[in-house]
Amino acid sequence: KVDLLIAATHLGVSVDSILAESVAGIDLIVGGHSHTKIPQPIPVTNPEGKTTYIVQAQSKYRYLGKMKAYVDQDGLHILSYALLPANPSVPDDPVIGAEIQALKDTIQNDPKYGPYYTKIIAHADTFMGRQPGYGYKDTPIGNLITDAYREKTGTDIALDVYGYISQVLWEGPLTGMDLFQTAYYGYNPKTGYGFNLMTYDLKGFQLKMGLEFVAGQMETNQDLGVEVSGLKFKYDPSKPPMSKVTEITVDGEPYSIVKTYTLTSNYGFYSFLYIAGLSPSNPVDTGIPEYFAIRDFAEAHSPLHYKVEGRIENVLETNVHENASIKPVASFKLFQNYPNPFRIQNQKAQETKISYQLTKREEVSLKIYNVLGEELKKLVKGSKNAGYYTVTWDGKDDLGRLMPNGIYFYKLKIANQQKTRKLILMR
Image (cartoon, rainbow, N blue to C red; front, side, top):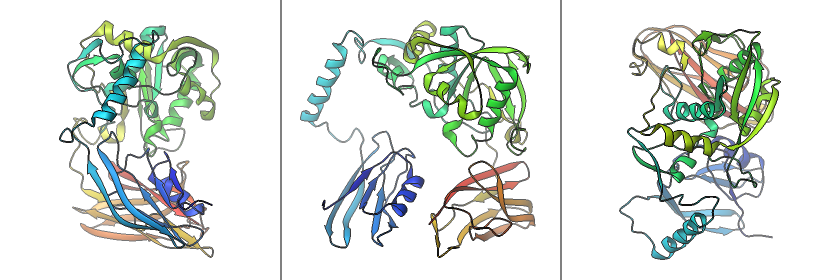
């Protein structure tokens, strides 16, 4: 028997909440993935009736979490908790610094890697981020990476997914490690690097089907947002499933449903194609780590200057404003529901409150959806004056059926603008 059980997870705070609610015996969850700054521990009642606490310290070493607590027969009791800023004002620890340098030296002395931390491969003359913007959903770093894939293999199209792009590139000199950190997922013991590049073929109708799958997910699951090279597409998230993609061009020409296209992606992306119902043909493992493609491309095209190019367009947003790179001032706000998570007890759901604010009279639609994008419940439909409004959801669909525990989404739509947030229903 242990005195204290800590779960170190990488699930995101929403799934951590489900874990805490569902699994007995966990005292503390130290989470990750959602990059959430949790200023005070989140208490969740677990199946034993005790409290499981959830903490997270954002990301990128911005904060160090510090907690003082004790444990007795009733569980964990927190005496103090703080997120301490980690910035250049904090002096290096000489012992830890020496250990880190020793690890770096070990890597750089391995002929597979060489002067990874010191050799300048290329220069960037601008910051290249990974955050999708308003209207145009391609990102500077995603455009660079997919261009690197396509140049390395010579295929018609290259694809990557937002969830496999891990870091940004900052303006200035770039070492091998800077470039490697942009896309380091997977591990290949033969190369010592991450995913290899895969090439394969898809018919045009399958390409369209895959983009429809992505368009149905990317508004609510950013990790599934796609990055593209050699291809552009437009989509309307308000349209029904499998009808959201309104335009596709390949190399500047309209795509053909019967034409066969050659594609490149990393192995991680390739392995998920079947989930979207696709059947790629002629798959080839090139044996080329994706890092090699990025490194060679950066060296050949330095200085690097990538920006949002409009390769992926949400037409609902670009039709609202002439310059989609500048987000218009919204005439509404949608707030996070409370409580969240909310719970089902004795086959009855605790109600959760959803609030929104209008700055002028608007036609309003507020609906609940499941993770497949299927509409479950209409909460609001009609014209509303300027003001602050709150509605409740009892966990039931329009037919009065109690929904199972899980993740749901609520979407507020005003004219051609919309906002989506996530909520959790738990037993």
